Length: 361
Image 1: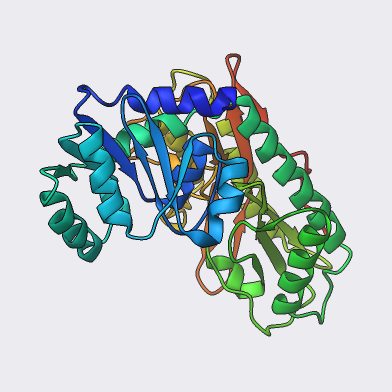
Image 2 (image 1 turned 30 degrees about the vertical axis):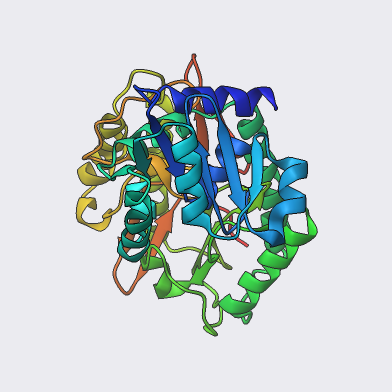
């Protein structure tokens, strides 16, 4: 067992207050995080003394090679979970409430009742797991940095392709190809490569619209490497930019840079959000910044912590967050600038090396 997996499983076991309790993980991302093997079907049962990964025949050989725990090839998953619980004297089984359907819960409960095992879906285990995962260890940080490096190489290649006449959809396809060619296993999300009036849509979808002279072009992109995501946004101008476009860009940039000065352990995420939001509001564009300033990134593209006005989370060393304020003027244009940061003891480390000055292509 790797040192990281052992530490993660021991952290998870600290949730169990009694030897008669156990945890059943069914979310494939959480399963992979704690045992080192990602797959799409099965479950991980964790007791005070054992961690058992249940997989079907398709995954058994790979799981035995990669998983940092016991591996069982199941035929009747819930019955075998019940039998193991009985053998381990488990009476209460905690479930990931946010990762089990009503139908699956009903089926599991019916079977586990036969083994006198009660189920708990109060959400406490979900919060506990999220709190473990929110602090990234060195192996995770290295993978995130690799994902970012891959994404940046692809973006810099794409800059050569952005010109009047090319379609948004074609640019999205090229960017995805460049990332895969540079070593990504996938893209982090549906890439946002939009231009002109569509840049006012924070999550606009690339179409057959053609880039035009005088457009803003927004590129929100990320790569996946060994399960870990990156996330970056840059806005560039095609041919030229109007005075108003440059003014809005400058406001967003000042807001984005203000966050960098604020990030450090002990600071409330809501205060981080307020720092960027105040600059945009004081410039008269508060109504046009409608999303959070940032979010966590890791095995999911959006995870804890939320860097929003409602967040009560305090930054801690090892957290990874985005810094992405924006201004979106409906049916006109929009600007977003996004970096990805690791909280350090001294402040932050920026995973992103790309320039934030307005590029006119």
